[in-house]
Length: 283
Image (cartoon, rainbow, N blue to C red; front, side, top):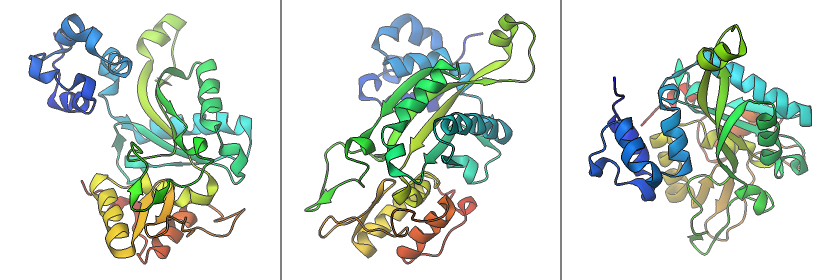
């Protein structure tokens, strides 16, 4: 039976300008995409089609936790003081997730600079990542400073998020297997995982920026702009008047003692009551 391409998949394709015409060209199933449009897909989209059956499946909380624990273990092989929080739908209390969102940090800022590349290479070498869809080091490239804001203008093409980040396809074992062939064919599922790395001085903003659903995050940014004349994103908070960084998370070099405390300090600094992650499910 041919796998139909749901509208949600077409919506995903439409986010990429290079492939926004897939649905308009009357391609309605994966066979159409592979036979007629394969060369028009980006590498990331080709990988998405290849693993479509796995990637469309929701990920149970227990599996999210196993993936996160494994990745944190490898981060701590580089340095034992790395910390992690599972964010996204998992932190909002959802029983299943479409992908896994992980925020990593370390109290020493020098250790988070360009760390994302080292971690991804280690996971690839150990066979845990089958494909890396993208790897960006925007935060490290600007010396791990919050996104610049000066004269009412944001840096062009900054995007919604500007932290170091890797979007990967993770090979997730499914129970006990027999021989290696059966393990590969039956007992491995391919999962989408986003690994985000933040310096500790702005970890509260990173956790806050990656926890809420879309409407909550838009409302937060609108509140900061209109009520506080501040520019918020997951890399930190800037004053819209003079572009200066607004530190709400504590004095350097240690800052907050843990990620949730840092996030609570951001809420307090913005004049807001801390909102439980389970209440950030709007949109």
